[in-house]
Amino acid sequence: MQYTEVMARYGELSTKGKNRRDFIGRLNGNVTKALRQFPALSIKPKRDRLHLVLNGENADAVMNALGKVFGIQTYSPVVRVAIEDFEQVKQVALEMVNEGASEAGMSFKINTRRSDHNYALDTNDINLAVGDFVSEARPDLKVEMKRPDVKVRIEVRRDAFYVSYLTIPGALGLPVGTSGKAMLMLSGGIDSPVAAYLALKRGVAIEMVHFFSPPYTTTNALNKAKELTAKVAAYAGSINFIEVPFTEIQETVKENVPEGYLMTVQRRFMLRLTDKIRAQREGLAIFNGESVGQVASQTLESMAAINDVTATPILRPVATLDKTEIIDIAREIDTFDLSVQPFEDCCTIFAPPQPKTHPNLERARYYESQLAVTELEDRALAGIKVSKIYPEDKFLTRGMTSDQIADLL
Image (cartoon, rainbow, N blue to C red; front, side, top):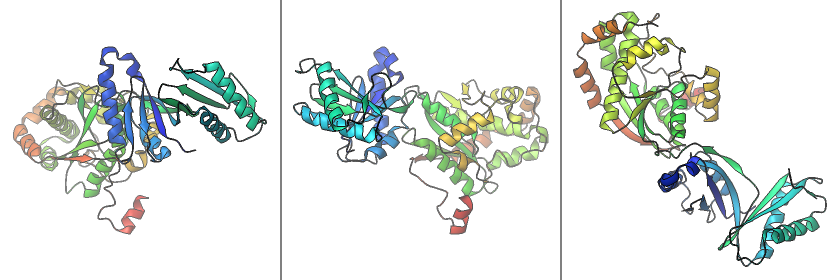
């Protein structure tokens, strides 16, 4: 089937009242970014839907990218027919029925909506004329009003007919950026990319903050985090990736803090640094991938001892999910296989065998007070690097031998 455009219908935007125009504008921008690899495509936002005129671009490829844009409820590949060419509407409807109802005995329905009430034929006339044409061409099919196998939709507008039969679920949620901006603490594990995806789904524009500790963490570990960001960027168009050097802080904490509190103090540093980056880059909140009780640092007592360093909202999208639920989402967004690759991040190095699962807040504060906190953090902040990452970016295969690449597959 040679489609001429894709019609996208808005999701939660219908509830946004006076802000609707701003939301549609943001969605239009996000779709433009997500589909930037299709130069011939033209995007025309309307009040009730978005028209993506293909101009020869591949409909399946466009829809594959569009399916990852939040704020869209459903979308359909469409054939546009000139308003004066009703006979062509019949032919297009027949092609769609032939494509969708390949076996004898299947059913179809023609469903017409008419926004142009000046058009000569009303909806019943159009339904009957097109339905009769299809029935004559396909006498092996039956007409079914309630649950047809193929439902051809014809929209009559002032400029043209719009004919479709497929309705594909969109990503739902809110357009990225309509809920403000936040930092996301990205490790190399399974949970934080899922948290990033869920934050984006609620319209939050995120920037990834990743701590790395060379030589204890390798270039592959850093590249893995960047490639995870590229996976998630498919839902945002692009994401800024912020590298924070953490070696000096980790070495200092290991040398001066009792083993049981290494994890707590390290994570207090991480959170405080992320908060300073958030303030510099005008973010409103911090997201992370913590799930209650999953590991020692994610007990409520540990969270309270770590959160003590900031009054900024800390949001945890996967906090109440079982690990299996998180893994299911990771597989759905194609981050799972990458997340389980065995490149250690700085959260796992220097990890004590028996970390405190119920750390005492006053002790954590005391051990930290013995360190040159401000100087350590200033040096880390001075060394950060920011890069923009796009969905198609690859990092892990760069500079690797064929044997190393094979080990990742």
